[in-house]
Length: 162
Image 1 (cartoon, helix red, strand yellow):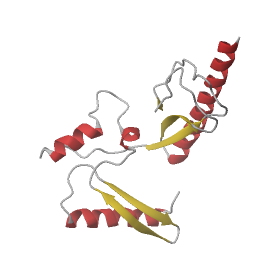
Image 2 (cartoon, helix red, strand yellow; image 1 turned 180 degrees about the vertical axis):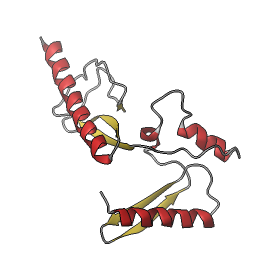
Image 3 (cartoon, helix red, strand yellow; image 1 turned 30 degrees about the vertical axis):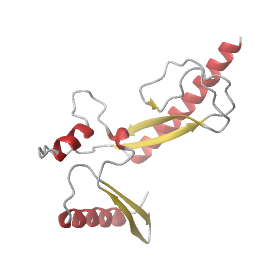
Image 4 (cartoon, helix red, strand yellow; image 1 turned 90 degrees about the horizontal axis):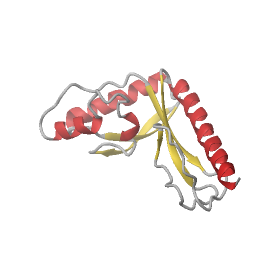
């Protein structure tokens, strides 16, 4: 977590930048930040690579990517508000899997290894995402979900070996 003062300074810097440039739709800003200050690394005039973790959970809500496309086409709708914290984590394989097991994947697991694929030890197995009222809540849920995936894999490997 960064101090509130740095977060406010980052927000103000992004606002100043956006007022001076013709950015349209969703864009991403990459910063290095510490308790002493921040440094702008780059501005990407497109959604960031983590856009999918910010997508609404309810199918009733319009996706952020659809809003981005609409804005690029000149139809600016209401600004989406992020009302909670979102986190993502890559889950790495604890051991080599000659054939990844067939799993009943939870909806919060992404970038999933297909059943039957070979997965090296310490290679990415999937990405898990979580939401929470605070960053700490999201991280706790993320930790639980990562452990759940590892347990699911171990159980499935044992069951298939039996």
